[in-house]
Image (cartoon, rainbow, N blue to C red; front, side):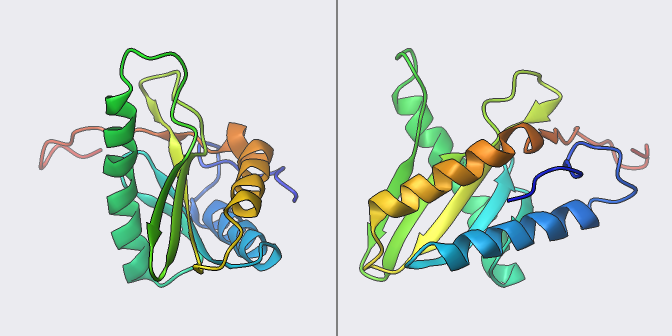
Amino acid sequence: MQNKGFSTTGNLPSARPAREQLSKLLADLAKQTPGMLHALLAAGDGLKLAHTMTVDEADKLAATIPPMYALVKGQFAGSEGGVRQIVAEHDAGLLFICSAGGQARNEALVGTLLAVLTTPQADAGQVAFEMGKFVKSLEDHLLVAARRNMVPGHGL
């Protein structure tokens, strides 16, 4: 996977080229991983960054995964280490969630989450392994600028 030349925090004239590249990389991940149906990258505040599903499905999943991640993280507050992965099992398949941009070390940045949906027959170990490889290859590029509280009528 080529990860040079784009960053969601870079100096691109628009986020569209970076998002299109990320969506292509996610599509490649899904194609090469048996049983993987869809993948999504979302900012820790619920904003979708790239996905392989419909816009409505991506919006719903992007809004759902940060609170799930925060809930699990909160259960282990004060413990050593961090949340590596969350797996939800349903009759229709598996949902995997992991941190993709690391924990933001700067309050002006938020971390990124990777979510993957699979078939019920998917090999969970293989899916987790492929997700880990994907995240490792892009981790430094997946921190995004935090959205600031906006006062109506006062511009950006």
